Length: 84
Image 1 (cartoon, helix red, strand yellow):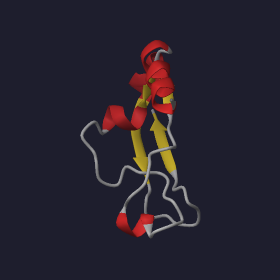
Image 2: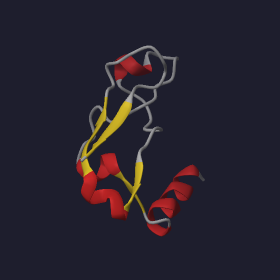
Image 3: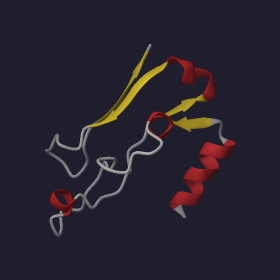
């Protein structure tokens, strides 16, 4: 249900998933959340739950998008973008 909602938001809402735009083929180190059970972080078994979305009009100003999976302190890690 959540994936369908997100797909609709991106396709019909005019928004762009900036991390996926800049890193379309990335599969390693792209999770932003890990369960506290079963050593999920150590095994790199997680979900990508945290996003930055931009309008298509702002896309040309996007300089970078990043995920910091090795910054610990929560079950989520920091994500960020840099705009020109």
